[in-house]
Image (cartoon, rainbow, N blue to C red; front, side, top):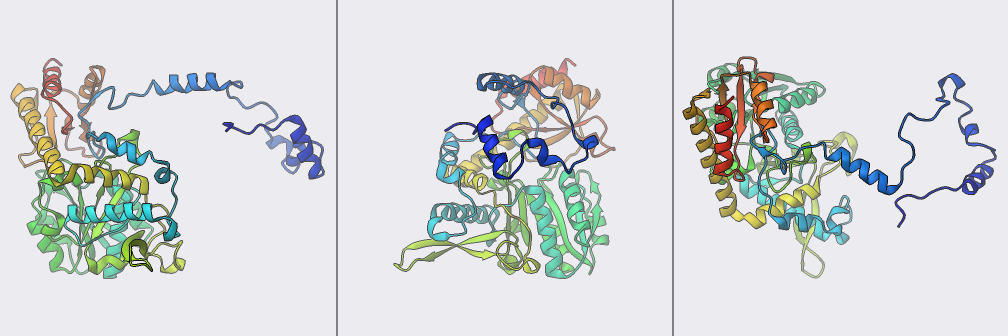
Length: 446
């Protein structure tokens, strides 16, 4: 196939004659002359395919990725190992060209993949039901907040400041135009301030949103939080790192009503920021309020296992005013990557990844503190991310590390003015002892 379909001068002449005009300029005669460009676009001269490929390659080489750098940067996107089979499966054309499975009889493969994905997310989170994937973790959180408003008929959303700053911004945008009010709870020693939470949660609170591990990497103590939330008959929403659930208590065990999170860690590359996928799981009680759709298992006329869209609360499927959301995509290819990843890793594999993240991050933290170049900021348990204060300007430290081929950490002063010269580092299972030691040594000679 041609990469483009050229129109010759003869082709153009025939098309113009068919609509009764003599030139392309006549098509735009209704536009005043002073508004027309009347010159060539200020772009490159025409190039051959070979020249275009060379130009694009030169541009792409200016980017540095996790393949070029040693990544100690987290803050929402994580450099985890992706088994090669994930790309092999997601590269199959029947998956990457598939659209919304409107006709189940010809979409059994896509529907089964989504069904398996939902099942694994439910098992991972300890929840009763999961929907097809959302756009990303942040918008999934906002959708969960809207579920809580619809279910409780209340307008206040209480969110901890230890939730990712970008998530809170997106949440604010969604809720503001949904008629709700965001109430933020401060952090105390890196955790949600439970005392303040107690004072703001009341009969007008639709939900409380807490992240675990939180933006600082700290594992929150959620026992008291859960009691406060449910004592007011509010909805408890948890945003989680799916990899952490290999070793931490599941949200289901903690008592969450809705669980959301970013699924990028599950077999999806960082891709310079996307595309990603959000996941959402809940109790059966809230199932019919969930946005998107839920794939269910049934039997066909011959009694064979089959899959269908059981719940379709999207505006494309039902009357617009009855829809729970206007989400028009289920990120099914990203969800397939997550399903393949979880299938290949299994329970023990996910646990092993989580254990390695925890051990390596603690080794890095202890070595940085021991070196004297960094000071501890919070004395709390953490999973794979941690905060340290540097003796130098945090942005300068990050720039120096980048020059040495290391990406990270994240300067927290951008979002938390009180955390001056504090950096958030992330250590995943991919990092070796040699790479961690290189980070520590570089920090020591700055």
